[in-house]
Image (tube, rainbow, N blue to C red; front, top):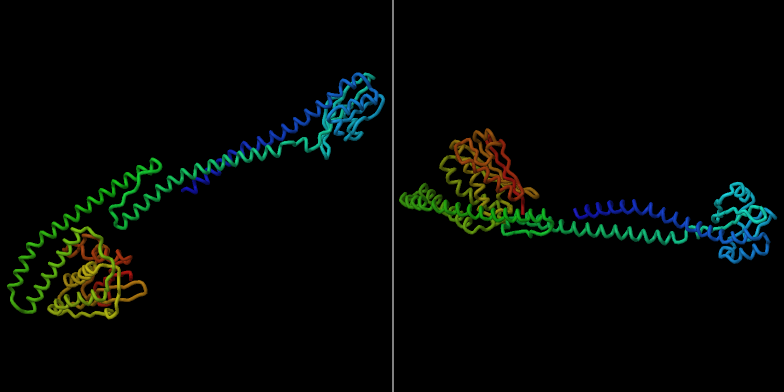
Length: 426
């Protein structure tokens, strides 16, 4: 923007300067030419009194020598009666005859200058031609210097306009950069960022609007965190009752599994309350996806064994570090595995695979169930064809996209749904 303003000012001022400079330069040149010819006319007129009074050669030469042009050998007198030329002439006989026929003042262009010819009737009833010669350096005397002065003025005006445009552009660009930096920092999660309300009036108004929006977003997010924390805290009462009921189940693998599930649920609720109250950014320092897969399959395998579900795990023998918090990856994987257990009949086979690539880790969960009829609808937040909240796949999708990856749903080799969680490597 700043460069564009400077270029516009440079182009506009240059055109204006040239529009005035070129005609003015021509006027200066013509003025110098006219001034030189006027001086030649004065020098010629200085001989008029002498030629009117006398035609004697000695007196004419004396009159020529008394003038400035005569002393510089630039003045001559051509007399027809008696015929003769006095002084230094710069024209030929043809030029002289033509001047006598015109009988009026005229000029003759020569290679080295201009000859001014002025006819005059003498006392001897003859015609005298007074010749005053002006060399080229006199015709253009002072022109080059004046042109340089005009060029300097034009350059100064152009430079001044460019400087003013640059300063104006700098104010606008500085305000724009401040606004861009504020938006970028806010996009990165810094809700305390504010931009200065300086610069041109339009940018100042945009800055005020941005600061108002940032403050509003901060209040909304704070209120949302409080709502989430309050709702999660309200779950503590029924969760405590459920935990007490689980303790009365006695011993056995089924009872132990229920108690572990309730305790895991309690931990998740505590994490939600802690994160909502703190308002801190999520921990994206990274986690080993292989360790998360192994840990969660230990939990889900117990339920799979109870439902006679064959399952396999592949690719978890090598580390796969991804820029996600452990809780976020756990929530995404639990959402995918929970869909398998919720929407496929008991005894349906499923598999979890980690596919290692150069810059990506693909976490693939597939099953042998009926599959997903409308994958596009299933990926929309809050949309579900199975009577659930419709948030499971959306949780997994947002986790993948937070790393720069993506989520894809299609039909896998087992015959049912295949969900690929593509995560960018650290």
